[in-house]
Amino acid sequence: MPQLVRLYLRSVAIGFGLAAVFSGALIWLDVAGIGHLILGSDIGAIAALMLLIFNGIVFSAVQFGIAVMGMAEDDDPRGGLGQHAGLIPIRVEAPSRQRKG
Image 1 (cartoon, rainbow, N blue to C red):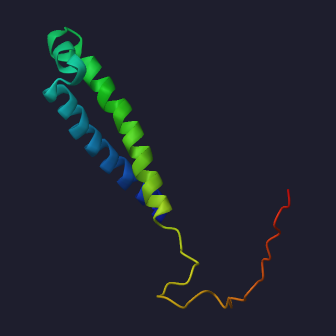
Image 2 (cartoon, rainbow, N blue to C red):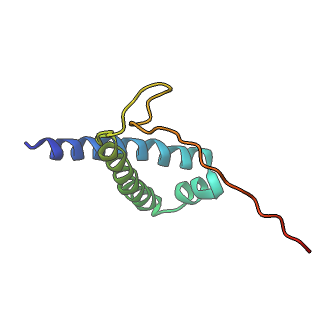
Image 3 (tube, rainbow, N blue to C red):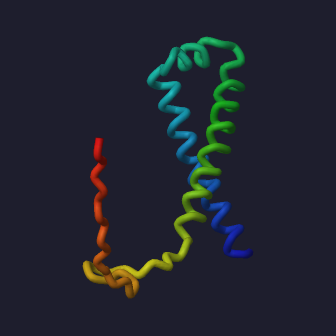
């Protein structure tokens, strides 16, 4: 299996795991009355499943984006003070003109 597919599947698993925790916390803490609505309805299981799936899609996409952006290579040199890629500071005169009037 290609490495990118493995990365995507791992991101989906992490995203849906986080979504399950997040959705469970929303229902358990009754944020905005959503727990009461889901637990008090006869089709609350469908609502909870939809909440889990939609949050899972969002969390998976964010997780995959973070993983892909974390793979970027940094082209800038690392180092302490004094490393400015060969730039040498020069003095430039900036005379001021006073207005008369």
